[in-house]
Image (cartoon, rainbow, N blue to C red; front, side, top):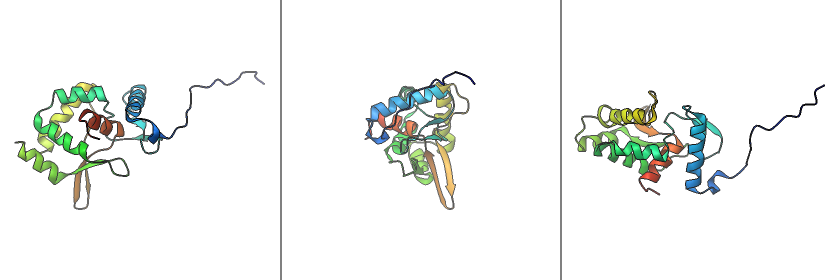
Amino acid sequence: MSNAIAQPQGLMLVVDWKTIPKLARQSILEALANEAGTEEVAANTATGEAAEFDSYPLNLPQTRKLFDGLDEKTKALLREIATIKPDEEGYAYIECAEAEKIAESSGAASFAKGPLAGLHRRLRTITGDADSKLIFKHEEGDWKSYYIDHPQAIESLRTYLKIK
């Protein structure tokens, strides 16, 4: 029989995620993203449980760098998506038809081939991650939309754009 005593590997706190101030949540999510490396795993803002996301876990400094290199039409589309309150699952959606109207009104041939392609090129430059994406397309029956699902990415965009 061994006399070894198990040593704890970390600190566990139990808190109500929604009671933590927004900027503190942002800092916690950034720390989790940095700790996780390139994995797209972070705390789900609704439950506090670990979850996997499609969107890159964009933090506030990365958001600033992202916006510094984007053209106005792409900034307008991101602003439009960021103003949409995430649904109960945490997704911020914009209907494809609406995204196309915004892209066309700013002179882009299409959302996917113009602003979206440029956004992802810029994101990959900033993150150094060749697979990083922020916005994904979702189709369900006749309904088609683009979405961002990572709570840190949504919160970083809303914070940067000063959207409450």
